Length: 189
Image (cartoon, rainbow, N blue to C red; front, side, top):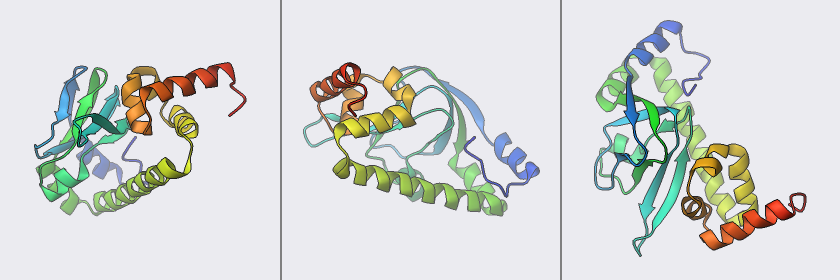
């Protein structure tokens, strides 16, 4: 559960949960589109979602994969109230819990433990993004693929090869070669 924070009181959690609305998306639906401002975040209960940007040549580059029990959010757009550069789209049919910005703001100021959870969550996400950016330069493409396979196996199972390749910073041809090598020489890596 994404609200895994040891200091929440049950009544606080109940109030937070009641503020969420169950929503459903179909494969291919956009949760957020480039140029629009985020007005909510979601907790992914079932499914797989990705975020991507269009590079200077107009190619889609996957920036993140969201898996079950993760928060689907575009932080800059939501909290700075600015249009996003990212697109967030469903790879599969998805079930989510929506938490709109105004209600979040109300509860954020009302429930001190929600503020503490938010700080802890944000610092953890900052660590994850920093780690990923360092790994793009310090790990081989094969090792980055193996890490993704270990950390988010649903991505490998459901996302198209081209999307995985762009997330790993390689061509789809290179990713095909890496996968082929791993199958034929599984103990080599």
